[in-house]
Image (cartoon, rainbow, N blue to C red):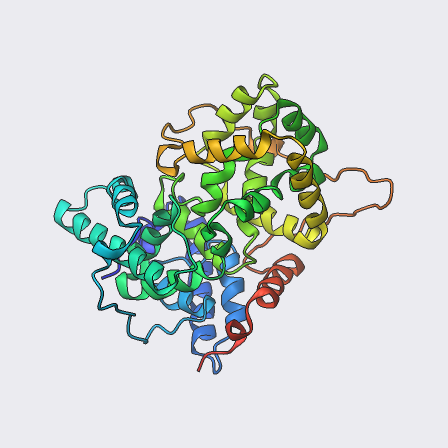
Length: 403
């Protein structure tokens, strides 16, 4: 049985104060729920509208809605029976011991106050889901942090549907993380600095001088921030966003977190240890809707196709240093997602009104004019472009419309 997240499924999950504001909030919420159901009930299902709803402010609002919409976003039938295996996967799987260790360390991913017996039952289901997906897809390789993604789906949609959704996700959005080597994961991380360079060259140059690299964002990327955020509401909100977008959107979101913390970074000593320590401790009270909007803006303004050359160049430059990749693998091996970011950030965040929306790096060969296009409930060109890119990226079968 799927669990209700801390976000709640009822009208009282809002923390708005003031009668007029609350009434306006409830009216917008009610309108959005109606639009989501209209898209679900249309014939064929309006998947593009569902993507817009998932991206726009507030995301999909409740776990009840997510149980209906997430399968549509991944083109998975919620009515198909779950896959089964007649094999004793716990005895046969080469990954069982590692999966077992990771799942045992996942206590904090379950709602506080959950009865121990219920939590232990869910952990057993979590193990079964992971082993079954790996058995059905021998080309996939387990990585530490994968269980953080699986448990999010388990808590929202339950074991049967989670198995189908995560299997589809593993062969598409997460595919690069499940290779036998970290080469493709490293390549995705290499998009981080070019994004920052386009928006804030001063911050980029400071981080390059500090030689901080991108390892601090590894656990963010491979768990879709599921491991590093303590509030389940924020995790599922990001999953709404990522499921509706291009697979590289998580690295854009990682970039806007760094950009949001610009002043904190620049106030650091310009050395790897200081900057890495700061960035590794992700704040828990980020302005998520603002950052989601900015990530969407940056994706439109600097699409992956424009950044690919810089990302490849960065990777090639790193290969010229004999120690770089070895250091990356060593750091990656030591940075288990379950050991990262245990302490919540206690400092003061830079006030939101001091954060620059978008800055462009001057280029001699071109001038980029950026329009700040927020992904609001009403949506604009940026949101539509993000949805379009997701639909264009999707495999052909994912473009099929639902009956």
